Length: 65
Image 1 (tube, one colour):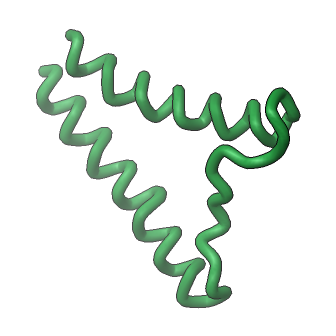
Image 2 (image 1 turned 180 degrees about the vertical axis):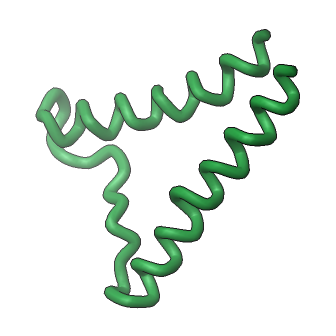
Image 3 (image 1 turned 90 degrees about the vertical axis):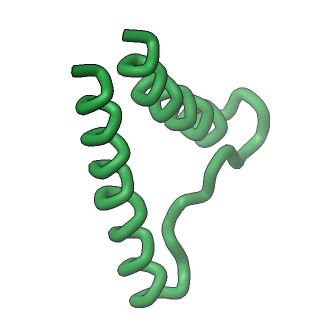
């Protein structure tokens, strides 16, 4: 069951971020993702760090199950 969850998570991420980023890039020339930016401790920086942590936890959960 964990394998199915991991596959579904990867498919979702590919569609949600990959496809949408590609379409936005074609339309505007920018994907909209800024990554971890801003000064250390700023809200922009914290949002970037938490986004990366969320992606890592999303992959780690089915792997550890």
